[in-house]
Amino acid sequence: NASDLYPGWSPDGSKITFESDRDGNFEIYVMNADGSSPMNLTHNPAHDEHARWSPRGNKIAFSSDRDGNSEIYVMRSDGSRQTRLTDDPGVDYGPAWSPDAESIAFATNRDGNFEIYVMQSDGTQQTRVTNDPGYDADPTWARTQFQTVPPPDLTRCVPSGTQDDINARLRQPGDVAVLCAGAIFELTSPVAFIADGQQVHTEGFPTDDRRARLRLASPSAVMAVYMLNRSNVVLSNVIVDGNQPNLGPAQGQALVLAGGFGSGEVIRDIKAIESRSWATIQLFESLDGGVSRCTNPVVENSEIRSAFGSGIALACTNSVVRNNTITDIGAVGIIIFGAPGSLVEGNILRAETRGMFSGINMVDPIVYNGNYTGVRVHANVIDAAGGTIRLAVGMGYRIWFCVDPNDPADYTFFGATVTDNILRGEHMGYGFAVDGVRDWTVTGNQDFATHSGTPFAICNGQVPSPPAGFQFHQVRAQGTFQPEFVDAILESAVWAIND
Image (cartoon, rainbow, N blue to C red; front, side, top):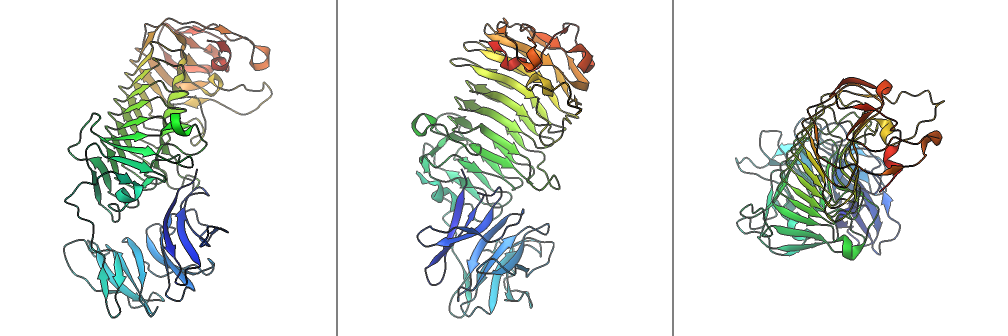
C-alpha cells in the first residue's frame, strides 16, 4: 500500500495537496477536499516534496532533487510549467509564499549551515535574511515580515500517540525523535524520515521490551517506517509491530523500507515482528535505472520474528547485515539481490514453531543480473530446530527457477564467497545447494543438520536429487568448493520436495 503524507489546503479550501509514493516514488498530488479525483502533479522519478500553495491558489512551490540536489521549484496548480527557481549546489528546501505572492522564503545550507533566504517569486534576488551559527529553517510569513515556526520541545521524549507525533520531530536534516520508554504509537501511515541525518530511538537505548512500540493500527497500513532516499538516517531501539494476527496479510511494501538513492542508513537493535507484506526489512534499489543506487546501509543486532513474508531483503551495494536473529519467518530469512560488496555475517536463522522456506537466498538476477562480486556470506547459523527449512543456502538461478532447455539466456551468477556457516536441526531439506555459478567460493562450512524430503518431478519432468548437506550441479558450478560437495540435480528443487 502507498503512503500519503503532509496534506496542505488550497487557499479557498477546495483542494488538498499531499505527497504520495503510490506510483513508485514520492510525488506531489492534488485532490478535491472530499478526497475525490487525486492527480499526480509532478510525474518525475526524483523525490518531490514540501508543496506550498500560493496565496491566490494558482501556483504551487515545492522542493525537488530532480537535478541532483534539492532545489526550489514552482508550477501551476494543475502541474504544468514546472520551473526551477534556485540553482545552487547546497540544499534548498521548504518554500513559503509571502502573503502578496511576490516573494518566497526558503531554507538553504549554501553558506555552510542552514539559513533563511528570500527571493522574488521568479527566483531572482536570492538574499540571505538570517546569519546565525544555529539552525534556521521552516520560514512562515507574518503580515509584514517572516517568522520561523517554533520547534517542538526537544528536551522531552515523545509519549504514546500516532505517527504524527513522531513525524513532528522529524522536520529538518539532523532532527532526532527520542521516544519515551514503553510508549506505544498506533500507526495509520508510516513514520517518515524526510531529510538526511535524522534519527528515531527510545530514550536510554533499551534493548528489551522497554523499547517504544510502533504498531500498525489500520487495515490499509502496511509500512511502518519509511527511510527511503535519505542518507545517514538511524532507526534504533524500537519495536516495530506489523500486527498481522489482527490486521491480516496484505500486499504492499516492506514493514521497514530503506535504500533508494540513500547511503549510510542504519537499522540497529530493533525488534520487528508480524510483518503483513512480503518482507520485514527491505534495503531497496532505486527506481531510476541504476543511475543512483543505495550504498553502505547497516542492519545489525536486531530481532525479526513471525513474519508473513521474508526477513531481510537487500539490494544496496556494500550492505552490512550482521548479528541479527531471524525466527519463524514464513518465506526466506535473508534475500540477497546481487548487492555487490555486501557482508552477511553472524546472523542466526531459526525455524522454531513454523516452517521457513529458505534461509539465505542468492537466486534472483533482479537489479544486478547475477553480479554478486564481493558478496560474503560468513559465519551464519541456520537451524531447523522445530520447523522445516526446505533450503538452507541457495546459490544460482536454477535453484529456484526452471529453465527451458531452448532458452539461450545465460543465467550464470558470479562473484560470491560463502564460508564458515553452520547448519543445524532435525528438519532440514537441502543444505548448501549450487546450480549456475562461476568464480564462486564455498569453503569451511559445517553441516550438523538432518536432511529429509521426498522430491517429485518438476522441471522438464526431472526429479531432483534427494536433499543433502552439500550439493552442486557440477557442470554448472565453477569455482572453489569444499570436498563434501556431490553432483546432484537441483533445478527448482526447493519447490519439488514434500516436507
